Image (cartoon, rainbow, N blue to C red; front, side, top):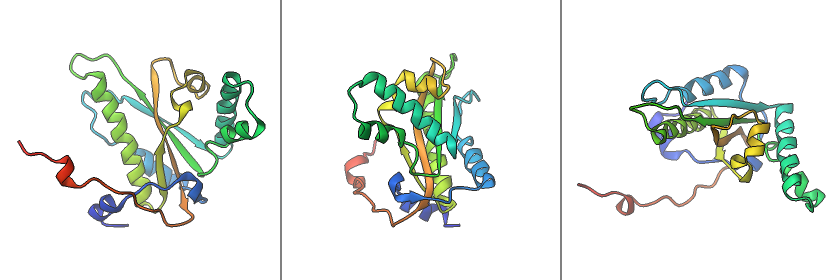
Length: 187
């Protein structure tokens, strides 16, 4: 297991198309989700939940996405429809991070949404620490209410993202990172 600081310093996203199997074992998935639930949560509201897409569930999710796409784009080509069907098929595991805010006198919705974001980042970091590639992505369908209903989200829930997890099939390239001099001020 890599040193925590080195892991955080070098973590990078792996494109789902650059992932293959195997994905996490059931025990590793439990570890990843447990770490995903171990985040700041002012008020102990648990303003997030997880949807696990694995095996045939990934294809069923793709059918939901493709059906909504066809409904909204009736002139779509078979190739375009196939792209939508395959949205969750590259990585062997995809975790949907659902954000749900709850009315609370002391915890505004944006704090609850930040907690969901922290959960997603913990999932990415945990998967990386276990030796897997991970990428936190969205896409047009992540905010489409018809797709979200098809995934089982309620009207007051949002999809904060889909975290694709698998074995990297090639080294991931880092991207330019901002210089601290450009993003840090002192008060």
